[in-house]
Picture 1 (cartoon, rainbow, N blue to C red):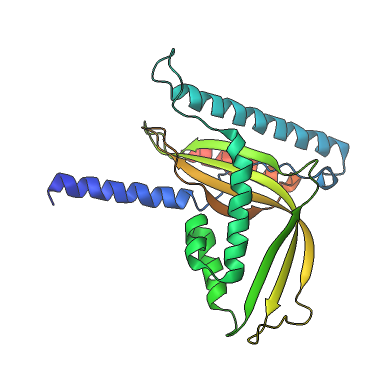
Picture 2: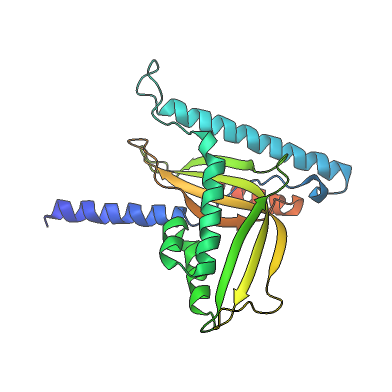
Length: 249
């Protein structure tokens, strides 16, 4: 391999490593709107918290619009970046269901395919740690609270560096409300007593993909995991973290 080829290969490997890391973490500054019951009690904090969310939503909208405009070859031509926001919820639901079914059945290939590297690691380890002969089942009984769920809680785009044509991370958080059935089977394929449960749960499912900064082609979505709603105290700390990151950059 020539010296130029070696340098190009190292750069390509480095980009691949950076994008893999980016697909393994939630973008700093992600605000997941909580249920109203989880808002802070004091009126002043409640209004301040709502104000923070409005600022973040405004920034999300402007950033998405700016990125789409940047992808236009000329001002009179159509943008190359097509977000297709309508696919976000179906994609999040499909990845969430695939992951849960694969974890229950011990399907490592599917976990590696649909999950980020950081999420896949502990899931694969949990499969390896299962007692010999023990089998698990998972079923999505139904989606619930359909008047309010599923709903997009966050939709962000962020370049991975300040370099021109840098890869762009696209991240979405979708709140999904569902009833799920979980069960365990022993070595004789009999249900383990007391293991069969139906639970109602609301999960904030985070997914992400990489957009090529040169071609504007989008890679496959990956599941980052589920994250908790943003709290007043948590966002105050997040603001300080973002401020420190800005000063260091």
